[in-house]
Image 1 (cartoon, rainbow, N blue to C red):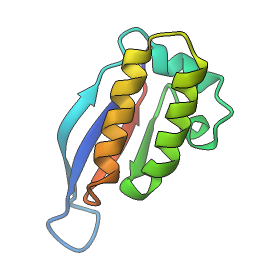
Image 2 (cartoon, helix red, strand yellow; image 1 turned 60 degrees about the vertical axis):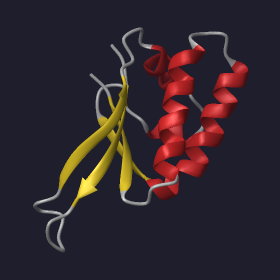
Image 3 (cartoon, one colour; image 1 turned 90 degrees about the vertical axis):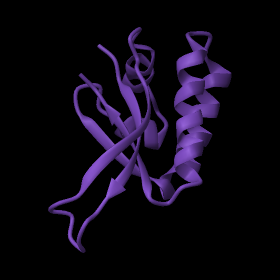
Image 4 (cartoon, rainbow, N blue to C red; image 1 turned 135 degrees about the vertical axis):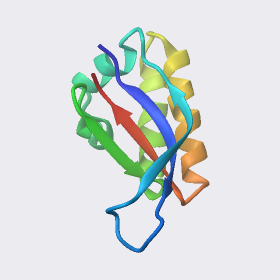
Length: 107
C-alpha cells in the first residue's frame, strides 16, 4: 500500500468543473509505502488530511503549508527520504504554477 503523488495541470474547457480534465506532469510512486506510513501517524494538519485509501487534491495555494510539513518530516525521520524529497519537489513545482494541483492518491 502506498500513496502516490501526482502533479497535474487542470484543464477547464468551460467555466464549470463538469468537463475539467487533468494532464499529469510528473508523479512520485510510493512503492515502498513510505508516504502511507507517515500519513497514518501524522499530526501535521495538511498531511493528516490525506487518506492512504482515498484521494486528496491540493491547490497550488496550499503548497506553502505542505512544503513546510514535508520539510519537518524529512528532518525528523530516518526512513526513505528520497520519496519524501521527490514529493516535496513536486509541491514546489505546484506552488510556482497556479494552474496546477497536487493529487495524493492512496490505494
